[in-house]
Length: 409
Image (cartoon, rainbow, N blue to C red; front, side):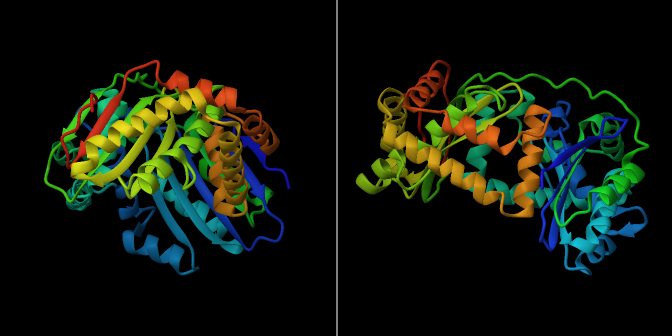
């Protein structure tokens, strides 16, 4: 069946993708706003809100929320990104209404108890400590800080100890009222779902939300720089980034294929040359991330501290060289990997729901699969090399935990 897009009068969007023969469904409420919308000094607010709505909503305690979904064998969770807040559930077909109602309760009727907030701060601070103790994760946030400096996009999603401790109940309620408006919300369901029943339930639970325009998003620009944490570690975890295209830019398909060819798999140049031929790294890969107004291409690795500088220098050389001589065979292999990965992901209800939500977030519409495949298949070696060359037209960002690297390395 073909997925369909519906819009409520208040601007809330709904995508329904029934899959014949499916026994389960994936349901998600995607809000196009995340940590980038936080005011300076309120870092971690969106992430804290994600935690707090599960502490009690619509008359259910945290335990009762968990039991309600797990009594039917389902799963309910959430995550926060720099430009997203997502509540998602998996259930059997008969329990889709329960999933929608629970998600609606979290968004529309959370308790946000002040005493619970103080207790949950301890949980988040523990999470913050765990994240800082993980050099790979910490290096990832340092990379965003290096790339985007003091801009909102460069701040860590989880916040800082100071900003988390300072959050109040009023901060959470004000942010929800201002940022989680109907026009920013997408309800998506895929798998064993009844379209008419879902639309009726969506109207009942979300139709009375005000039709308010969302606040303007603070624009971001890639500035470049270095963030080095020279703590003592068994390995150095480093990443460097170059300014990449925005998520919806015409250059993104070619950039994605360039990244896949350079460092997306075991056959990629980075893996073969740094790991297989030189033995300089166990983990080495490239990746891209696009936002509405900016983006980045990055290479991340874990190397022995004594090899970090040599590995970084070689990785940068490989990326530069690929912009000049990436072969048609490498591009063909990368295209096949991306196309196969997409098609395989669409064999699950969760994969379909996530795919539709991401496309809607970027393009504001349902994107036919054929259109996406055509864009992938249209990228040839000339286009991939041009995308790689364009990456080198701006500054570079570098982050490292467990070493003392510099961009000149």
